[in-house]
Image 1 (tube, one colour):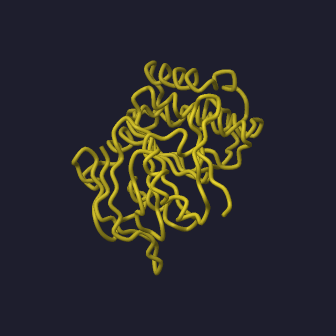
Image 2: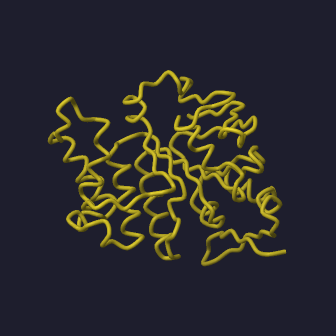
Image 3: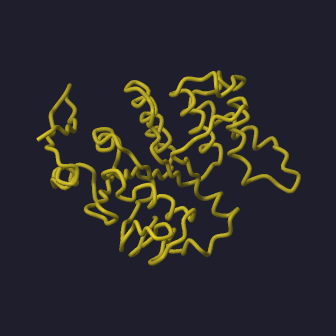
Length: 253
């Protein structure tokens, strides 16, 4: 379990998070939602130790974030940032980068590392792309390769910042189904999403941020029905049954 207790964080001259307390449950998918500039990505960075706290604490199973060594933490948590470069390398080489926290002094891939890379590419359906340059891949293919890299890191926890950014609607669903599959392997997933229907359809829990503070958190359906997301975004919301399944909709007032 990941606990944020009265967390405050931000940038020089620009505080962003104010007294935020949230809990991310082990083995679940939690989505962070909120208007632009509310602090979602800042919270993710603070929870991962990429941004220093100005107040509060972050605990991983009761252990304070600052007590982890860098390599130890990289074996617990993998991070997919919002901005992802397209380096001039092949897909298989990028996925191999996920094994770096596990390599010894020589930095050479052992048999176990290569097996883990092959497994990650098989799970994500990227094995056929291994020899292709990243620049040759579609947006959806590239995103699956980056997810394979985080999976190859073999951590219990994945932090994903906008994993569906710049994807078309079919690619978004493809990536979200993959994230659900990764979660089914026992992984804890915490992600920032702008697409509200996807957040509520694919998450066990949802946390709503508003102006750097937590406005709501809980089981996804309960948060939706609370009306807080609709209020925060200035829209209306409604659930509808589509093909025997409850779907979540947001629309203009």
